[in-house]
Length: 317
Image (spheres, rainbow, N blue to C red):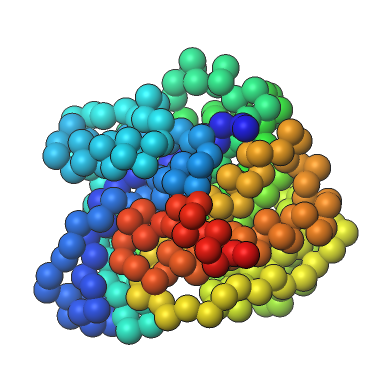
């Protein structure tokens, strides 16, 4: 089994559960562990994989809480940096259909320092880059870019999810697109939402968007479509893989559960990139990942809602 290194932010989600369509109507919040790369790491470990989280949190009760949550879910935290800056916070309101309204208060995540000793661990392993806050400047962005260079030089399998957040990139979409392109160009697997695929490609149909993204360099593309499943595209095949019907309570972390489940399955392969061109096997993996994402929407909080292997198997048979 390969190790999966998840690089990016870990933060506190303060969730206003079923209290209005946006944060203007929210008045009571529940603390949850979050951050897209942290969610992915937890999904992998909860399903029996071996994951490492690489990021920074504050030397405060929130930071300590996040580290303990990772440990509880058997995510390795030896590369988590705990620093004096306050832990990053996100305030999230949920509409009736489980969709989210975000406001971020950034802190420690942006201060991640590059660890030159870490790159030696990347040989033939898997690296997942979740970019919700990682491209916003500071030492995190510098470390993030250097880890990509390390992954390439160490022959690692590279996964990328842009995790676009409107609140963080107001009037800066062109900059966001430019910063994502180097990661898209080097990734073996790219996971996008429909909005992200259209934004990053400049196209308005799935086939056209995937053509642009493949031309940038992405080898396999998974575009999550909510209840409709996932559109999968490689240079040799394109199809939509269905999911299961559920009643969503909270869509937070569904995409992270999807990519975490997919990466866990790929970590069991000797040469993960070879699986991408095995259409039958790869689509079976995507189907299982769809089910994992769907299960996650049926409870509140991304990490708390992630299924374990037994829960997943009960619905994936």
